[in-house]
Image (cartoon, helix red, strand yellow):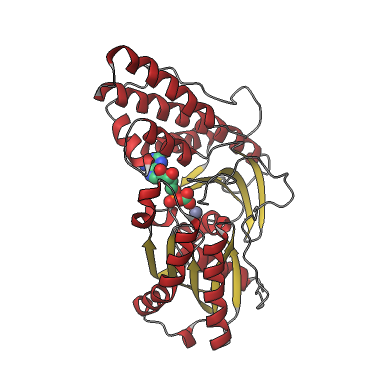
Length: 365
Ligand code: KG4
Ligand code: ZN
């Protein structure tokens, strides 16, 4: 008998209010029926970062409108859904609570089952939503708040191979842009400058490559950049456009090299499991960087692994990934009660020791 599951997803863990409807018929490739994202950047721009209280209030004001739009765009009514999935963490507590309360309200009013979802699992399962890849697979999650290598074995089953011990790469791109007077978010701005820069003019460090593990560090790159910037700017009282481009190119080349080297190690570890189809997926906003994407693709080709990266709108924060992760949990028999709580910290791999970095500083996940 055919089983069709239609799930409403709700996401509000940082500065995007999002709702989406995802459907799967049996085990076929799922379909995103709608995906609505209300960004909040204009509310936070003046403060140079996300202000948790402003974010929480904006989520509370926009969630019902967002859900309404997602339902309308998907042409579904609440009584045609099978469950409601909601991000229950990790993230900014006020925002996560707004989403969880909204989902509980809809669940109480309709009797629909409630499924709490880990936001990071949403990112990590996206390659199954977009490409239908099977477990197990290796995933590199690179965003403004996270950088980790995980082996995904099931919707609630992840093994972390390593991650950043300080800044996430997106955070490093954003800080680099700030230090060079470029606009936020820093990633696209630094990438655009780097395109006409000389990556060899400034010699940036390649941190942690002397260690045989999959851990990374990005905070030293920002210090190196500050020092080089000041050395170049001091004698002539500022930077030329070419100086800025060369600094961006040098910084980006260092991030690319570090990610490539650590990805080689992560793939080697994952290959020890003898996966039938070795796959590396990359997700998160930094996966939009074309230099990083193409280098990781080359590494995969060299090592005989398949490479996949979701389309950009599903790499950055969205609710389709939450609906899909909820769908997988629901299918596996999981659901939550009215006692579902918002969790600001919620590592995917509970057996690995917690790390210093990996989102402890970044607001985003
Ligand atoms: O996944 P995301 O939208 O938010 C979370 O952190 O969850 O990622 C945002 C991060 C920002 O730090 C942004 O600068 C970075 O992704 N980013 C990029 C690029 N596009 C976005 N970093 C490098 N190159 C890019 N093209
Ligand atoms: Zn995220």
